[in-house]
Length: 439
Ligand code: ASP
Image 1 (tube, rainbow, N blue to C red):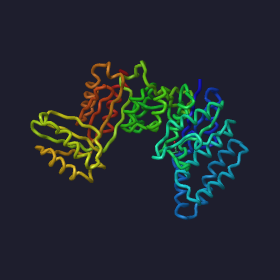
Image 2: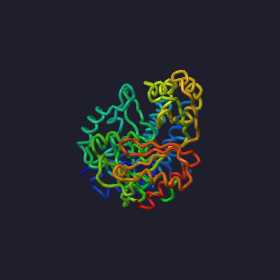
Image 3: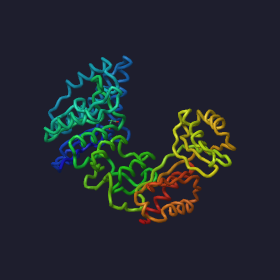
Image 4: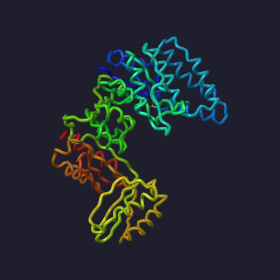
């Protein structure tokens, strides 16, 4: 049994948090490979070390004085080292970083130092070997992650080791410089390491006890999800639920390795298991609810639309030509409605309408703005009668007007359109009918 454990920034923000992490790792000897993030916020007013590094490097890039900012970053690490009573010194590392900043080594290099230095401290603290991610994670000439080369090099390197710390978030670009993943990318490193060592499970430690059925900023006391499939998670993350970096799913999903989201501040809580398949029913018919505000519905009407070959293609090409991505497309017999992001659409509205008029010659085009989309997701919906009925009676009781309904043929989700103003109430009404009544 091999576990890869990734710890997020808030789990490593201070010496106190580091020692919780140490206890977690030492409590289970199968936790052999550790992927740390950079130190995160210690409290709501604090700044993440990654953000400090970006702003410090921005000064260096403009030939402004950056040493004061760099000293503040160094102090974050020194307080962790001292708090853990380690004899480690990062003096030489900071000298090198200062030189590289002066030489304008790039903002990716700068940001990556957050995890690099935290990795050195973590390895020293645990007595594990430190592996610089630049030696085992690679990007290709197009700047894309090179999965094959990485897997080959990393698995050869790690297979010789009992334990190791591999810092998250970065690797080597094709030209040998440092390149990072997008923000939150340490999750991806954890997933890549899990695949390379053929881990039994990828534990992703954060500051919440797993994924919740709904956004806790909208629903009070939202319940945790025990088991969720990759597909369900993808639907929920697409609609705004954020637990894990989206790209972190692919490496482990391919290798069939489950992800366990765990809470560093409550290590005995089960957390959420993210799996490929499961026969375990979700507790409440639905697995989760998520949603986003800020859509416009463009409804195109034309008599006998259904018999006009190529109508949809022509209408959609009006959006494509103007670089507008389409979110949803419910349709009637003589109407098709296209949901687009309001922010993206507003500036190009007249060009799109003009193109639809030219291409399709419709009877009418109507626009409705300030709409929200809500996804109710659950593998259990397929085998349960009346799910849609319950959603709509809950919304009707809450006096919410449903503007759009769209159920995917996989029966994994139902998408509902409501006005932005009804968004929070709608999510609460759906949550209540499924979770609080426990059916
Ligand atoms: N430290 C990086 C960030 O703040 C990567 C991560 O934490 O996953 O985005």
